[in-house]
Length: 250
Ligand SMILES: [Zn+2]
Image (cartoon, rainbow, N blue to C red; front, top):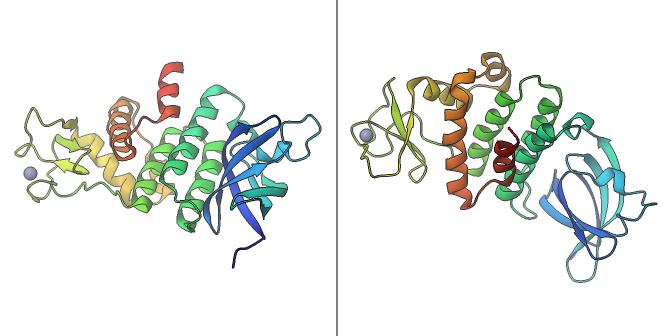
């Protein structure tokens, strides 16, 4: 039986203008994964829904079936908002990075509670963190786990030998470390230093509190970003817009 109406708790990932005054809202819900729903009249001056449907807002909403199988947002109210994630361009980019990757990896209308909790936790952490880099990298590693793309950091993905504490290579195509013995100069591998590999392993296995306490040395950040961005881009088969944008405003 098709449900006519459901109540959801969700975080707003993004919105797209539609028609004269409407907007399609992408929601990550607690109970039914990613849902796209139409908010009618939301761009009119007197819309009571508009303020609740800005990206990165945690809401409770009533969804009704429209014509066909699409959802329409009939009621919405804010549970929690993160005003300091929208206060400047860099903050917005950081939050957009989380919502963009979530949107790409989440499945339509399939419950994924782990992902939902990760996204909400990450937005809360971003909103209060002085240093956002650890928040974003922790998000990357947890997201890769949840999506089933946990990179192999302990054994060479080519020969299976344990990875030693020395400079190595990373293969996006193979999803992990390639040891120096197996590396070929023409094979599209990215070098990864022993120190960066240490942080990768730590963030992959430790809870957020420990990762945040360890931080991430400034000198190693560009290397980490290069490797993770190229892995994520490879998995998604396209560029991450918010990351590209962030690099432009730096
Ligand atoms: Zn090897």
